Length: 197
Image (cartoon, rainbow, N blue to C red):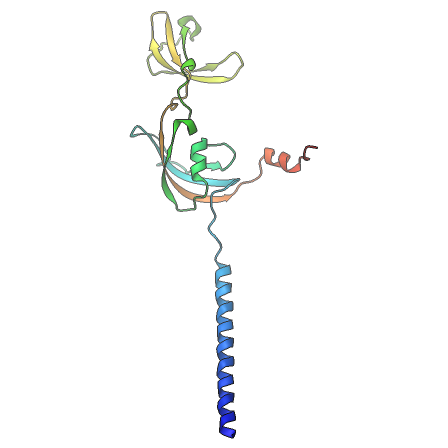
């Protein structure tokens, strides 16, 4: 009887040690899981630093190569809508090729934005040539940019569309940094605003 009791005692001791060991392992595993934070993703009001190269019709038209990274704040309409939408959810270190259609880029070409103006309305020292960029103010006092599309004897044809209107844009981007953005004046007003009745 005594040997049987000793045997059962050893069994209980082993089971108890096994349970304690498994419990400790579970605690360590849980603590390890909790210690690894989820990677930060691009989301609303995040300050994002990017490297990018923009190509249109196979030609590079803009790039951060050899320059400081490009910074913008997600959700504040600081970049074109198609690019912002596709950057949402990316993480630091992600590299991706993004294609933006004209509708989500700089818009489709508006034929009504192609106008003919008299040479008399141009600056006196201007000698327009096809492809020249002219800048000025419209009757509302807003600045505009126009590309000389055609030169005639007494007038020029100006294209007031954005130079990249109607173009499909290809961005090769690499996310370098993501951090919370400081609140803007707009955010501060919104945060303190009272709901409409």
